[in-house]
Length: 143
Image (tube, one colour):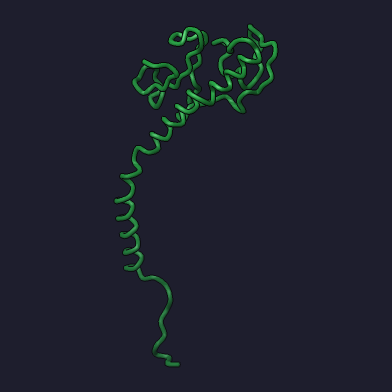
């Protein structure tokens, strides 16, 4: 073995810099494609909750008790038996595992009887801006 021909293993500073530049270039190309996808996913999740998951639980509650929870009882009545009148006679919940919170961290708004759905209930999320009527609300009624 030639003792003059020994070299050390490891990366040089230039090699590390080259790898960092390559990763940064790839990130610059890929990241713009994902911009806005998270917000679209939040909107889709809120629509699924408002148009499917929570209404199913509310329908089961109504089937057991003869009416939807009152506005005062709220959708919390789907998680824990309400102690506010009108008291449910045949509550057999919980109808949901936890009180539903929209993807932006705000509880859904529930009104029964509804202002828009007079024979039913209004259920909506105030969306990203957290302001009612801010243009990004997600509702269970047509405007």
